[in-house]
Image (cartoon, rainbow, N blue to C red; front, side):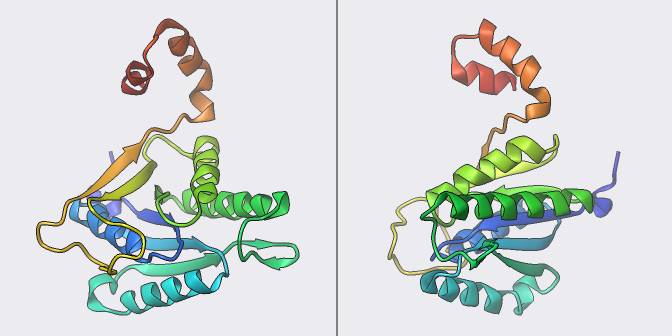
Length: 198
């Protein structure tokens, strides 16, 4: 078994216009004892997302994250950067970007923490597809829930005292285990029981 000091972990996060989705997720993972060495932010090239990206980049030059590397990865098709997801080609570009990044991180021997709370809903959907295809047993998908927060509310990049925040693990059906799971699904009626078994 690897010692804790040898474990390397990466947070891959989709980004929309709210940079705190990334910073609060990272804060929670660090509080839980995860050794995050790198944060990869997958983003479009829209102006609102550009502003959020700029806010995040400033955070990564502070003492808080001084030992964590930030990589920003734009979603690009063969015709250039994607501003938003309007066509099937845009979605293929998103899928390809997520796939390449998860492949790279896993090939380098890192555990993947995938945050699907930021950006367009379709980013979360495509991220789950990639997780199903590529994840190993130690990789995790996370959803961030902040009580009382609404879009447009005052931005707080880090949790305040007493603020109620949950980082919720999302179960991933890996295709490598699909056969065993399908046999179990046939025997169980309750999806909660299937998730618990998995």
